[in-house]
Image 1: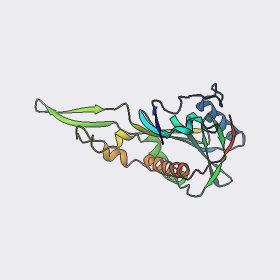
Image 2 (image 1 turned 90 degrees about the vertical axis):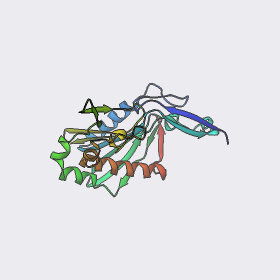
Image 3 (image 1 turned 30 degrees about the vertical axis):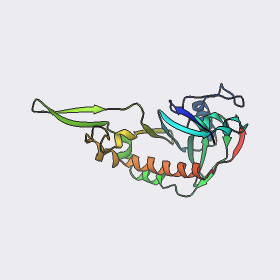
Image 4 (image 1 turned 60 degrees about the horizontal axis):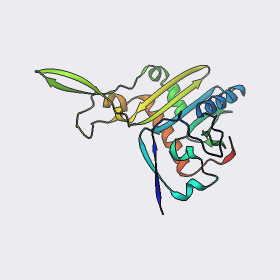
Length: 221
């Protein structure tokens, strides 16, 4: 089987069209419209989650690109996931610009409780950048290091009119840079954040739904 390669260069706001989809539709607009519809239904507990890698390489079987049901967005960009609480139950759907998907009920929804139990801490805590220390002229000097090809896990909580947003760059969560072996002095701070617990739970739920192909296509956009 011939393999083709696609390179994901941008986060979820970027969009690529195909003949089947409306190329004028942007995923951020779709997410915004979905949230507005939930809010019209008096739903005030919502979480938006996205996970993507910049500069990553994905392979696909060549026949896939010719399938009428194939969405280019599925091959190049990760979808956005929306969680919400309705009648004491938590539901989840995924959004890309090609399809409207079904919603599913989530049983393991303890991330709401984690936030409510640590609200003040989570609202104030921040992810620190990757920093390392070295000596120059017998003096300790601190440097910040960044990369342009990291993976990201971001979530946004919309709770009773308030918005809380947290962004996690996987590079800042590393203990050491694999190339320089410089220790990240913010490693322990970052991995012990209460908000990271929430991000990890959201990533596990969405990864499992993707692996199990949980969502059903309702219609194309």
